[in-house]
Image (cartoon, rainbow, N blue to C red; front, side, top):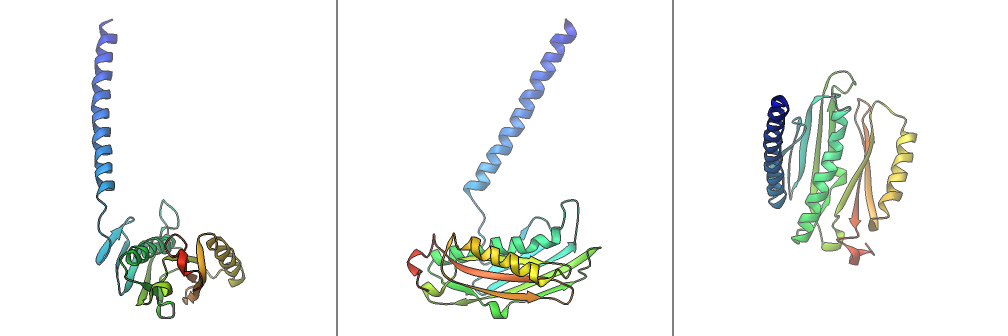
Length: 204
């Protein structure tokens, strides 16, 4: 009986401690959500720690330096996802502040060093922006890419499917450009007018 009573006390104490820790973590998460960090005109480091980039009204400059694969999978290849997310958010925020921007697709520079699916890789992207008139701006960005010398025919099919999906959330004309590196990296970058921000620019 004593052991049962004692064990119940330990269980209740443990539950209180764990509950308190969970509440603190929840409060911190709520606080972080209520006060998001400023992302414009600054250098941003995002997980994993190998992603480093800066974004401002002149453009995006970033690089990934680290393992091509780790326990999470093809981690280096996910840098393009991070770029699309950050640039898309920045273009939308700038548009709302009446700073109208578009990506200078013809001036994008992409390089890869050590892309061999074996060890570390350095993947760098320089993406300049242009200031334009309101309806010439773009508020959405997406990419479609492949690694390891995948046949371009396959990538083109994926690119076509991506364009069809984007038509559901975009209006007007899209712009896109194809890029490749000597190490078998291939990618399309696409910019579009997001209908939630530019509904009255349908003719552009």
